Amino acid sequence: MNDIRIRTATTADVPALLDIYAPYVRETAISFEYEVPTLQDFESRVTRTLTRYPWLVAEKGGAILGYAYASAFHPRKAYDWCAEASIYVAQNARGRGFGAGLYAALEERLKRQGILILYACIARPPQEDEHLTLASILFHTRMGFHTVGEFPRCGFKFNRWYDMVWMEKRLAEPADPPLPVISFPDIGA
Image (tube, rainbow, N blue to C red):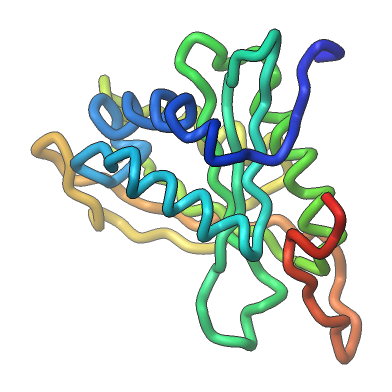
């Protein structure tokens, strides 16, 4: 992992990021999207995210191998200290530690922002199939997340129903009252 660089995404990265994401939409139930977003839509997602949260890429030799980002858990102000994490690794780079490195960097930045709780919304198959395994749940468990909510048969893709689980990781214990949350650009990432 010494030769892996983790950095903030830029709009120039969007084509490579979308290339990583597209197979997850087309071939898996990891994403519940049915259609691959357009390049313009995906660029808008990245730009909008970076106004408040980190969107990080892992690259090796100039090639982007994966990305992780945070987003609002819920738009209401009382949830400011919570964030939702998402991660996608290139199909040919999975299982080589890039995801763990991305999450470690994401968590470090979120802690600096004042985020206390990180959530992950994960599709779960009633039984593993060609579109979805338990790999994402097992990965998040290894990263210190635990299940806090389950929604049976709530997502329909590839002519079958999938469950969804919410997993949680406490990044820090809250102060009373909590310190204000800082936007990502303001932490000097």
